[in-house]
Length: 273
Image (cartoon, rainbow, N blue to C red; front, top):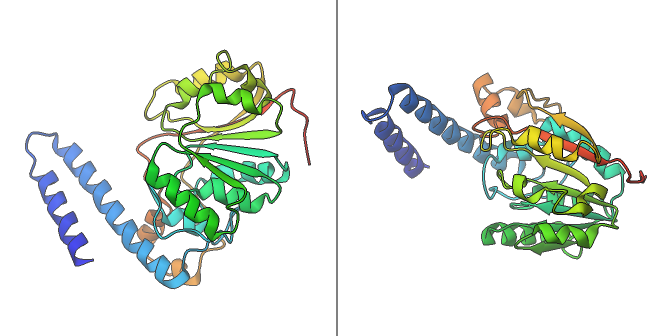
């Protein structure tokens, strides 16, 4: 931990001494770096005291990993990750989908977590990162669902046709590439599939409204925004005794800007469950 502290100290020093950048930008970048460092310390405490089981939410009990492939980790273990979306995850679980198509699965938090929660569902997990695919495969085996979690590298727009007649949910998180992939003109099969997509407005300005326009005729659409507020009823007692700033950092998801979710139900799809 001393090596990490020294590394962060040097990086912050470099940022604050950089005279070629706007001083406010340097301070903001330094603050973000320190916040990530502090959240990693909280993560180590959580792992030491509670292990890797997800503590609350629709994926409660998932035997998770010690480090996510990317982004925040503590919020996933606490079970408050993307909490505004969780009511729709519960609804998805109740619908008993035949197939989950998770595009951008990372280490498998959703691909495996939802497979555990939906024992009759085949989870198709896709990620272009080799390390993420390996982590997802390991997580599936760790939770005893490796027979129902099928992992692939690339999901192309032409592949939606394979699932046109399935009772399927597309769950998509691909850092802005959703603009190219989720196109019902090029992939008419999308009109019959339920979709939950993270719209990376902070990376591609206007993408959210673009997606809404594309699917408004074929889907009932709910936009889910995130105010940052979190409920932690399932948090351990020691967490409630932490400083308020540490509690905030534990639930912070490291986002650089807005990433609303679009929950899109195909209008002509029969409800199941």
